[in-house]
Length: 217
Image (cartoon, rainbow, N blue to C red):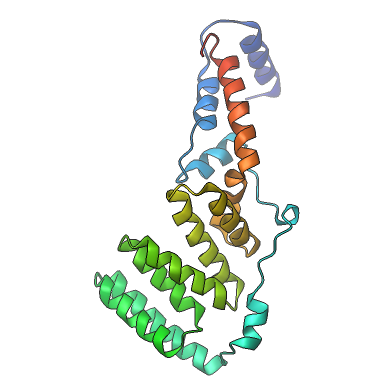
């Protein structure tokens, strides 16, 4: 579509009180959609997606730097732990979820400072609808994390659970921390969970509804 025709179409829609165009209806649909799943794709299509800017947040998320010194894990041991973790994940994915949890629990019992095992056991607990235990594990994963990927995933998992529980402020904080660690889901979610952005978004959405659908209250 050319710029000329687009400009003409826009002029007609603002100067006419006729039927709402399909473009405007789609815009309203995007503005009023609130589900986490799929909303980022709609935002990208609509051109409204904004990447999370960690420079605008004064909080930091880098405890893994200190943890490397406090809870050292040498490369040989780390390889063994990862292999056991992979086996536990495969067990869970094969359908025996509890056996996978038990294998991860054994790793944690032997090496209680190994963050990744807490992170993966939390995922298993979520599949068992045990959010309380999942949150406890994620707190431990965050406490002992020694790399950004694990830390970011833990913050993001925690944010998703808290969001589902209705704790929007805590969800935003954890999404923002996950975003700083480079987690892509958190980077997409953090701007949407910002309470100030949400308030502005609702105000803009209401203004657009009044503009696009005349007479709607």
